[in-house]
Image 1 (cartoon, rainbow, N blue to C red):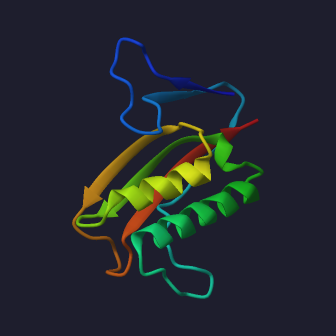
Image 2 (cartoon, one colour; image 1 turned 60 degrees about the vertical axis):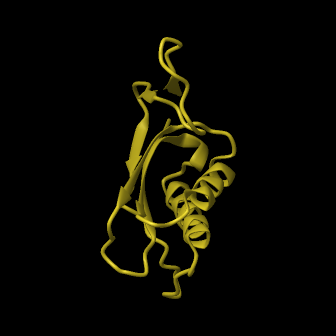
Length: 128
């Protein structure tokens, strides 16, 4: 069980996430690398929304390989290259997490390792 932490003495999160999360003892914990939008065939979507959808799909596959689902997400960090619209990124996240409000950080960066990558997401999940 993951306990999502949203103290009533703080302002509510500004989007679909929680201020913190606690992993109960005895859980297995998965840490992903920063996941980018390169598909298995080597192609990369040319929109930030397409890349976000592809990344969340890849994260779902990584979770499944660890016998987890995206509902087991504890926290994730999203790195978006400056100048891209954040709305499609958040919409893809909301579709993928289906209301699960894990802890989240979004960081705007000047560039990623390859110029065609518009965002990168690293995730932590936990399950029994």
